[in-house]
Amino acid sequence: FTGRNAYQDLVASSGLVDALYIPLPTTLKKEWTIRALRSNKHVLVEKPVAPSATDYQEMIEEAKLANRYLMDGTMFCHHPRTERLLAHISDEKKFG
Image (cartoon, rainbow, N blue to C red; front, side):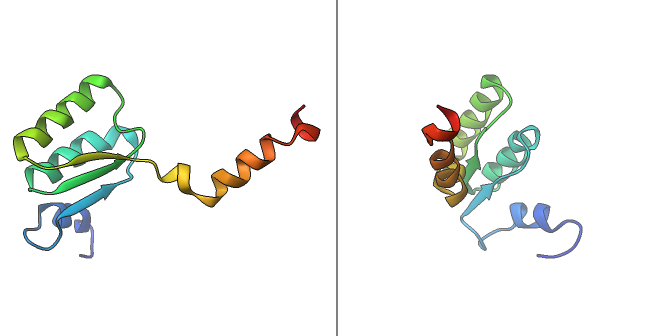
């Protein structure tokens, strides 16, 4: 998939992918998650999942209607940068 509509084409594709990872800005996640679910794809959405509980509930309902998995991601928890940050702020010499 290339070009200006590559993401749209991927979401709308049939039979090529079973699931999508959606790391978009929070305000775009609901729209693209629902598009993916309606295209019969499972979805992994990076946190924060939605700007409001209402939006997230709508996403959950779409997943139920589509009989697809909707899961929230936690990439930042497993990123090496997070481990270094925690080690840095845990240093009592620097932060007491």
